[in-house]
Length: 424
Image (cartoon, rainbow, N blue to C red; front, side, top):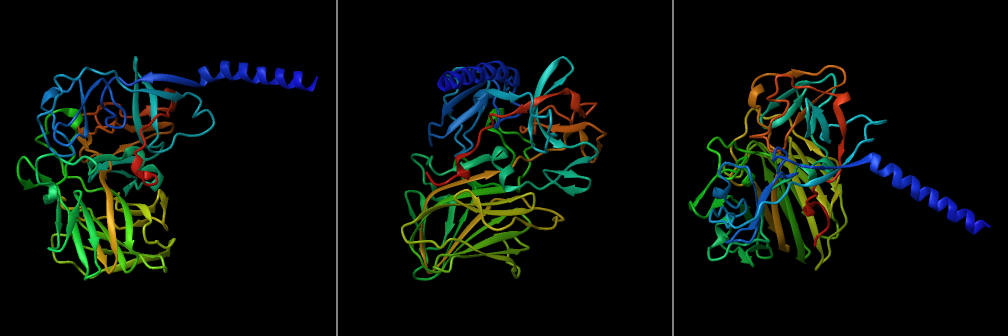
């Protein structure tokens, strides 16, 4: 009798789930590239013929066949032979905002006129929104993301898993004469004295160094009005071969250098300091910001270290877990274009870089609201597309606000970069 009742309960639960789940979750196909590369509309995909990195280009891009590889800059890509592929299909939680309020950076499906749109929420009811210096400002203050909010907005710039064939890729790493590249990656060896490595953006076809800009392979050919970007995320899979001394990992945003000094000894401490300068000028005196304890490194151990300098906020994490609190720097009067965003320094120890990836945050352009602010009323939201140079969104609409009643649900299936987890 008990077994029969349990079976009936199970059947009822299954029937209820089969009835309710289709009501709650809706499948939606992305039609355009306004949220690329987070979500893709109809597109073509190929592997770069020089480095093998995947390249995705919007089928509707006016210069689809003139695209270049964002990883190595190669432009002779087999896109003409690649078939058109349909846009991403995502799941939308239609009940997400029945009890909870929408949050900043949520990706939402909403109704505008006769069409459904997918964008990212940037402004909330009652706020005043501006776009300045590539970032969103709320009520006159730069909006800063938490570490957990970075992955869904991360846009890849370089992955050394895809090494160009037939060319000397060593120009990307500026280093001491003693520095050795092993498999195209730095071997950080400070046993005979400290050693410094700096990663630079070197364009192989043009044979020159250039700043990082807000280019998107998805658009096809490069934009003449590309803007410098300043918010970087670096992921390093590191194996400690000799656990002694310190490893220093530094990022710059074109105004300040912020550096984490990781002890490789049993003490296992982490110190963070900042310098008001870049790697290309004479360094100013450092200001120590914080010291925290971390799990000691052991010889032969591999860890993934993530450092991010985004929205003038610094994060450091080990194997996907943040270490200490985020550190906020005051707003900079100006930020110079960045050619060399990352510096590695080893003192006494020896560390092998097993993989290196560099990404950036979404760089927002003001577009139609340059120098203007948008004041949101009760129940109104300001939305943006991740593909900022071309997206139609609250920056360009005559009526920029989206009303709460027009929100259809929250998009769930966002791409999460592997770089925020543990090493492969």
